[in-house]
Every structure is written in structure tokens, then in C-alpha cells.
Image (cartoon, rainbow, N blue to C red; front, side, top):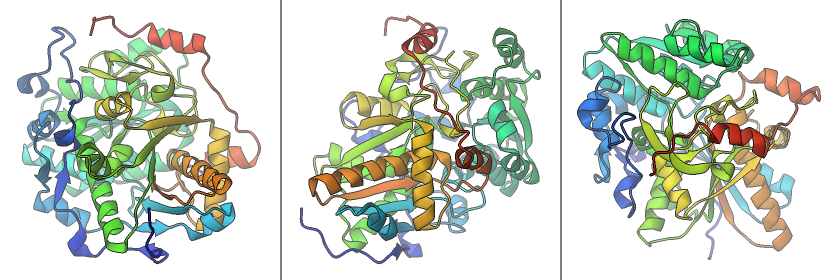
Length: 459
């Protein structure tokens, strides 16, 4: 494939190239993602059955498998303009460090106070909650990027915000917790003693460091039991990948504008929001037979949903209060080790991405956290940005692909998602720099304990 002249070091889209509609990848999928099931009837969830949990307009987006483009409401567009478009950056210094013939670009989503891509969906979900006349919302957060983004969005629309933060991250990342509180959110370490499901999890797993599955259960319980509240989620759901498509749409516009022709697109994967958003328009081209790309999902070896999980129906949360999703899962009872990439510590994966992966349209790999932080430090020293531990997984994947190009002499263009900054993750960097960071890979026996919790429903 002939390459055009490389683009300038930094590429900023002009304002009129900010997407005005979200792209719904499901519209181009021949096999749609499996529907969420009611845990009692095992039938696909109906609109009215989802209403006690989610906002009405978000339910419509969740269930819409056919509309390719959904207009972005003007108030959301106005908010986006405060920090979007985000830059697509040519990582020339990283290329030189690696002595690779590959061209490396990254889409940087850290240019906002929340420090990550999460704000793209948080502001949308807060907007629809406000439009519905709700008093507030509840949610979970792992490393805190999503909770921070949602607290900002709720402050903007004058909504109450209740956040259940995974206990290990609550303790490891006090500064991100304080940003949430500064924006008015109520932040509780999970599992807590404030909810029925939290008390049960604490009793069954004494001393547990928590998980996203635990925190989701608590947030949903509070939302359903509190008038005027609904639950919102920062990843996994179809609607979240829809909102995050602004990442990929901007990336595609920059590629078209500057003659960049990507061969490989890489993203970290926890629940799937940033990866799904980044690859969306490119995957659409692949599904329509217009172009071909390699897509690589990178996850932590300590929580390997894609690479070692099972593609089955499972509960989306530890407390089993949420609908069931068909996804790559380690089992809703799986409690990952307390690694520092808190945003990737979820037992399952987006149903959209799970279906694409099962069809062989995506690849996946996992890395131990010391190797990930080694890549993060290399990147920081030459590119000038301290990456979030989650983003560093994508960096590691990109570095490996670039080294492979060096060894084979292949000229490939690589784009990866730099989902956010790591300036609130300095405890993790301290552990790495002091040589105190350890790696943990679950054994087959460890995974079997999680798999044992997967319900056998014959689907």
C-alpha cells in the first residue's frame, strides 16, 4: 500500500470537523450483538423492563441496532467544543527510539479535566437524565476516570451524583476521589456496608479489595431504590460505545485529511468503551467490505476476559441485580488482583466487541503490568505525556507491533488510543520506579472459580 507523505507532528482537527452525529456500528454488523436478558424470564429485555434502571432515551439508543447515525443534541455539542476535537499525534520520537520503519500515531483523549475519554459519554448520559427531569444518577468507577467525568457532567447539568468506587482504587487513588468530591459527587468505597448487596459481598469475601462488578451492583441497587434516580454506566453498554464513536470519527477525519492510511488500530480493553469508539468507523468500513484493517484489543494478564474468558451469557455484576449479557467473561464472581489499571478490572467485555472478536474480526492479547509500565515509561520519556496505566496497555501493543516491523522490514501505519493521563496514578509509578511492582497471572484453577459462577442457561 503506497503511503503519502507523513503528516505534521501534531494534527488538530478544525472545529467544523467535529462530528455532529454518533456512529452506530451495530447497523453495519451482519450478526448483531446478543440482546440483554431478563435474569428471571431469560427473555430479551423490553424497553419497559429497563426503565427502572436506565434513562428512557438511553434505553432507545441501547436497543437500536439499525440506525447508522444518531444526531448529537446541541447542548452536548456545545460541551464537546470545550475540549474537542482532540489531537491525533504523530509519535515521531517513539518511532526514533524504536528504530522502526512503522509510522505510529495516537489519538489523545486526555485534554480535559477528567483526564480521559470518559467525558464523551458522561456528558451525554447526564444530559438525557436532566432532560427526563431526574434528580440524580448513580454509578460505579474503577480507577476513577469515569467517576471523575460523570461528576463533572452532573455538575454542569446540576444533577446529584452518587459514585461507588472500587475499594482498592479508592485507597490507591485519593486525588482522583477528591476531584469527584470537588465537583459535588458523593464517593463511597465498594463493596460498602451501605447496601444489601455490599454487605453480602463483604460477608462472602472478607477483606475483598472489590471489583467493578461489585460496585455496579451497589450503584444499581441505590438507583432502583431511590425515587428520581437512574443508573449510568461508563463502559460495556451499546449506548456507551455509540457516544465514544466521536473518537473514531475524528480519527477517521484526520486520516482522510492528512492522507494517513492505518494498517493496525490498537486500544486497551476493560469493558470496551474506548476501543469500541476508536475502531467504530474503521470497523464499519471492514464490515462493508470497503477496506481492511487489523484491530488489536489489549488487556491485563490479571483480568484476561478476551484471551482466557468464555463467550457465554453471564451476569454483568457480582450481585446479580443487573441484566444478563452474552460476552467474553471470567465469571461475575471473579475478583481480579489489585493491579494498577483499575479501569480494566472488569470480568466481562462489551457484547458488541465480544461478537466481533468471536467472528475473528479482532485480535486480542494480554500483558503483565510490569511490562505495561515499562512501555509507559519509554513513551513518557520521549513523547512528553505520562499515560494512564490503562492507556499504557495500548502503548505496549503498539511498541510490540513497531518492533515486529523493525524485525521484518515491513512499513505499517499504527494508530493507538491514548485514553488519558496518569498524573493521578503516581502511586503506581512509584511502585514501578521502586522495583516493588509485582505481576499476577491467574492460574487455570483461579479462573475456574470464576467460571463456576456463570449460570448454565443453555444459551
